[in-house]
Length: 387
Image (tube, rainbow, N blue to C red; front, side):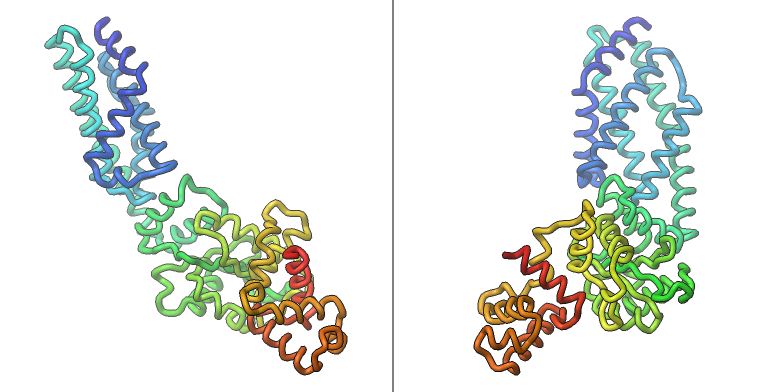
């Protein structure tokens, strides 16, 4: 027993052993070869714990405790949630046991048959017991997810917009298990009733809006949930184009964010929710929804952490700063400075009709009408920051 304890201490003291286990698992189990970031960090942590626990059981002639089994069941449930096949998980443990057997043999200067037999018996018994527990837990978790798919999809979006995930990869796997593919690029739409006594905010209302916006294929990509008094939809970016009409028909108003990356969906939600919290009444218009540019301007005015002033000019002016659009940007600047089309035309030596034509082109290109008070403010802030 003293020799076992010596070997246990030697192997657990070296980070090389756990690293060797992870390397072997990734080399022999394809489902683990593609892991990265936080998921790989989790595998390393589990490997280190399992290594220490198995050596302790061998050194003391012990057996898995109820606490050990609870932990293995929790690991299995987590793998069911992120979509990693249970067969791959169990194979990873078998590979780990093989590597550990080789390490124990190499660490023993004079192999003792009784110790070697005790280790093999412990490893087989442990693998048999944890396999049964993990398969049971994995199956139960999978059935729970599949049995309440709508709830699981709603919880998936809840976790996305709250930032409750270890990595985007884990949530991508989780979505795939539920038959969804997270849209990329995406539109995150947050909507609320125009009037306080407007239509009820329910999951059914969210799903109805989802179907109207994403069409017959919405089952493949889009997600919907409810947060407080608001509907939240994650859509393919192209589906957001129909948002204004769909919201108007349902007496809703909203903010659609399309410029954030997939790993910043929680940031997109915060921007949209804050925009609806702070936008003045005249910022809302039946023919349009608030967008990234509006949300960034409101975040800037409110001094919110999500504000990105360096992006505002690009988001709002966009096409006007492209080559060949100088006369339009000049017309916009003059109009904002003078306050009227006639005065702007005089300052530029143009006919008023020519100036008005340029204003219409600006509205077409930027989807912002300089004659609208709110949109004029956003254009003014964008050109000021741009200068």
